[in-house]
Length: 312
Ligand code: 8YV
Image (cartoon, rainbow, N blue to C red; front, side):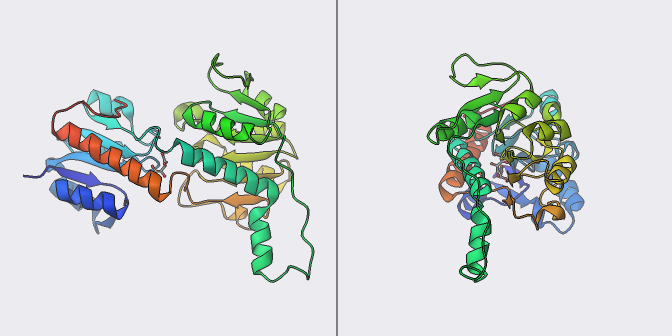
């Protein structure tokens, strides 16, 4: 008898095929009636596979009395109640390290795209405007001061890349780290004031909700650029839209939003804003590596072996 698992969001075909080979997979997003699926199959389900942004609500977790493991295809645990999982003895795993480079790459890509107006230039050429009308000058990126909010693995990978662009690097985190040469700023508003570009690389969750607020955006100022490759929840999205509308900051590069896949419509027409649909880890190479870790964690759990990358 194959163990039964709940797959909450789609993954790469080759990952889903491997899941199908090893397990009886219930695809929640395809179910015409999700509650009926959970009622019918819930008592038999022993594992969940899900994305970092999607996670698993306590309502789902509590519909699965035999649940042993939540294998997150991502690094964020903010959409899973870890305390509740621990209380119920449910293991939680993520896919650390394998996505760090991709997320840092997209952070730099958004930084460069926002500064250099790359998407605006692309639209200008495609619209046949080249040679017919002008295009405003862009903003230099090399040498600008980069402020990183959250100096974890991804924040550090961004710093490494930014160093190659001769960017002085400062950061804010819950504490200073003595193993990095970057400038620690002990308040987020202070970091924003110190920076030309503020890069959000902090974990989501209750501790960081809305911390990039109007005060921080005003400290970043009318020449400042905000980049977010972490979680939409870290930024007060209404305050961000307002700051952009009122030109209190210069622009933004955003991969994540508060209520995905919804994005604030006010952003769609802003030329100084570059938008991505939560794609920072979305390369074939990385999604294969992430999928392999999801598979390895599930397999280890059901074989009674040590989990490769546990969080809880
Ligand atoms: C993924 C993420 O896009 O790592 C995370 O926490 O949010 C992203 O890497 C996501 O997990 C796939 O749904």
